[in-house]
Amino acid sequence: MAAGDLTTIANVEQWLGLPAGCKDEALLTRLITAASGFISRWCGRQFASQNVVDTFNGTGGVAQPLRQYPVSAVASVSVDGQSIPPSPGVPQAGFLFTDTMVSLSGYRFNRGIANVTIAYTAGYATIPDELEQACIELVAFRYREIPRIGKASEGMAAQTTAFVIKDIPPSVATLLATYKRVVPA
Image 1: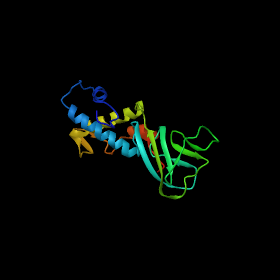
Image 2: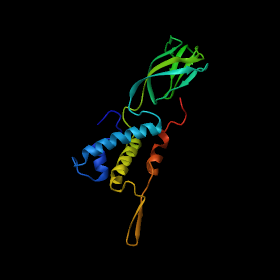
Image 3: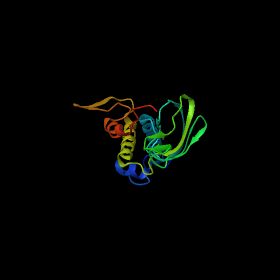
Image 4: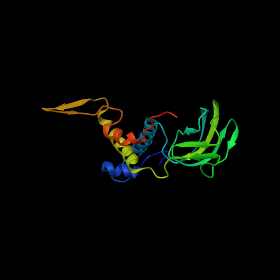
């Protein structure tokens, strides 16, 4: 399993009804990595827990949305090179955080260009089931698409079969909708 993969080869083989160790494991492994990367880019975020250091333009406000989430820890916050300590609790001075943002008490994110740096840990320790299922279904979609790449439909006698010709099946898009970042940070 590559770093950032949202599922395992065993789960994909099970979903497709293939035996463990099937002849297409190398292909399925490549599809898992590609589908996981596609989902990450489509949603505009990473999902596996990781350490992140982001630099922002200061807005003059007291709250800064973070690019990756959910946030589980904030290691440091600095504004204009000044380190901001963690707050022991509101209304005491320092920084506080939620799963999506850092807030300051007694300080401001002074206006400036790339003057705010926040180091934090964000992502899921365990990938949520519906996110993993979306990856499994996208891998299965791509795997089953191999023999019909480029075909919109296929006819035999009096029967025509139409294929989904989209980047992402609607069922997968529905599963991913709640994970997509819609507001740029």
